[in-house]
Image: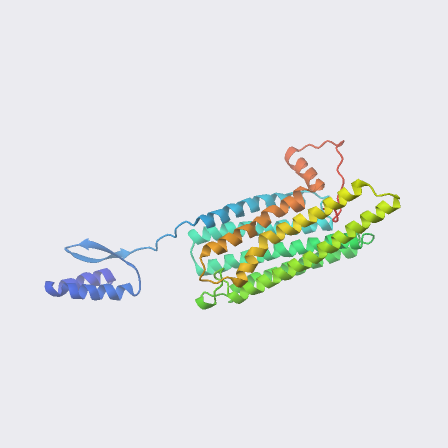
Length: 348
């Protein structure tokens, strides 16, 4: 017998003067299990149906993250398509750029799926899978940036032996390790390292635990310091090479200073963009408290997603080989008289 029929039978079986007492007992017992929807029928209130949970109010921050994810996915999908389409883009440098674009593409799709599942399919399991997917994607993106930095350093430090089979093997090993570690980090919340059943252990990014985001932040700080050190070494090598070239020509021209200054400025912009995007979120994950307003989390997370939006502009669209491939892909025509120089990984 359904609860609504039981409600009617009980209320009709007792005297009218006592119906109010039993009515409140029935309401209290039913509210333990569900949220009732009460209607007027036959002169008494009784249960008609269970009211479905109210839909979550649309958060403007979630909308901005979804829009950011859409832009990220579109930008990086184009880069992945160009690299896969062009047989000439098979050098180690473009393999690394393709890895970065793939990671950012997955991150953009993860942001879109997170929005859909948050407002359409609300489930703890789906939430864990989405968070794990995002963690793995962004970790792969940051790791790919580190691999690109290492590749640029090696191309300058070992310029004579860079184009060898050993370099290709080194690149593939770095990428395999980066994606393997990223996948493991993404699986941690899915395999149980979450705060679904222990809200006291939650971090500013639910359902990740405080210890989990601390590990992720510490990993980011380590990667950032390594990249900072490598870019400083790259700047030293560039300045030293420019000075040696100038000495071989027996005079120092203004063009050497301009070229060196431009290269150093570009490296500073690359590293500064990366740090400005991720450092606020990484720091807040360590010092933030889960009781703080969620707007703080959104305000630091949104700029972090912008890094995946800027990456294809810095590492792909500025490259002349990719520009030529885009021209061929979209226009279907290319004037042979236009000369494009293949750029090495050390070109910035």
